[in-house]
Length: 88
Image (cartoon, rainbow, N blue to C red; front, side):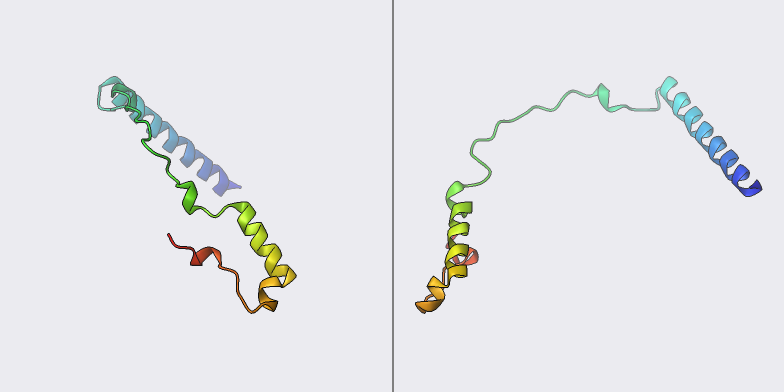
């Protein structure tokens, strides 16, 4: 219990020292805050970040899964073109 009290006293003294240092630097101009700068300019996107033609739709993935589960492509000797085999 004595060690716990020493630890808490150490944490209290350390936090008070950091707080006093912060206040001192804030009053004497040594602390530079971000609010003093000018705000960043927002630029609008010129095009979408993702091209919808290159993204496999969820419906296409669902149809491919149904075909594989039902065994259509496997019975006919063909394999379904996977997600990774599509041209980019």
